[in-house]
Image 1: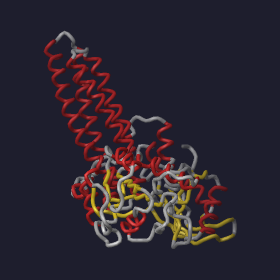
Image 2: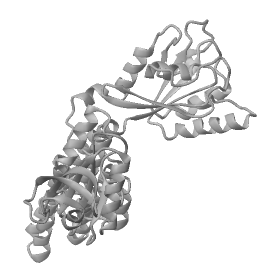
Image 3: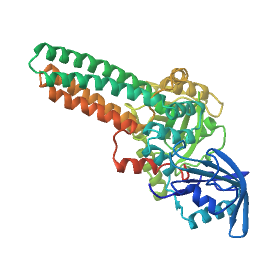
Image 4: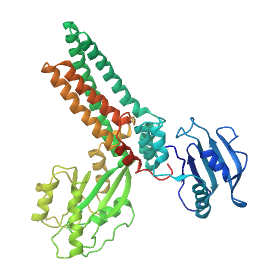
Length: 449
């Protein structure tokens, strides 16, 4: 990190302003080369300076340049932000001049990566930065802010603090093995603490699953045979004509996507190709996609025709989804009933034609995912799949701790399992990490952040 990086931090296009960010040991020196105004190497830190960006004797743009000197910056390096007039040509020209004068183009997320590596933020706070940028609802914004301001990290740091206390107690036991009463006290303390930490982690996990839903939304697929009304249901939920609706079977051949909010939670809906046996090559690819998506979905809306008997193919799908989150929609109740409702579980009746059942469907989804409960819950919990999986890994190590104590294993063996918990919690906040993980994580950030 000895070089100086630069990138455009605003969306490239026509706008009032664009911001080009520069960070590194030579940030101020490099910008000063192309700036006509105050000597940026002599101005006070955290000041905004008026002037012009120039290319030799040619004026490029009238700008405001913010100078922030280390260590009180986002990256803990010298940081400069150039505010230019918004426009593709102007912005690219300023970026070009910075690159010609010694900057390197930043990688995606490299400014935030430097903030993490320089100890300015931890890994949860870094993920929170990206979550804040990507937040599509007020609830997801609140989660991201709690990540950014360190409230979520405090949960993990408190757990690590409790484990350090236990490890210190074990060290006493190891240093003074001749005192049997110390060993007995140590084992009891470890067991009690392991149970307490397990309860706390289970509580965090329970609420973190809700936070993951708030952050990522509910991946929902609409499946069913051709012409049962899948596309009409999608259009009705979205209140727009997203999918083409005709009486011709097989109209939807690929996945059609749309999003809608229910109680502040994003429902990411995929309308799939009608599931049936077909000789049409294109349609058969769509059918395969539909079946594959069943395993990936958080919620399956399976649409059946009230006016038709359930086929053997539909029975196979009912069997396939029975252990997954699903709602069966019996559509077209405005027509004569031929379907056998006794074969169904967790179903609602609808008539998209007569606008019947849409509100019931929304309420069913709210009930299934406890959306009303999430609305009043504390937002200070984990929300990334990475963090949640690591926390579950901690539970496994804690079970090993409890088992070892009950089987009277040597205390130094118990210490190994406890250190595994401590290290895994450290991975969540980035106290311990691999370079591969960090590179992969920050590569998902947008350029210039």
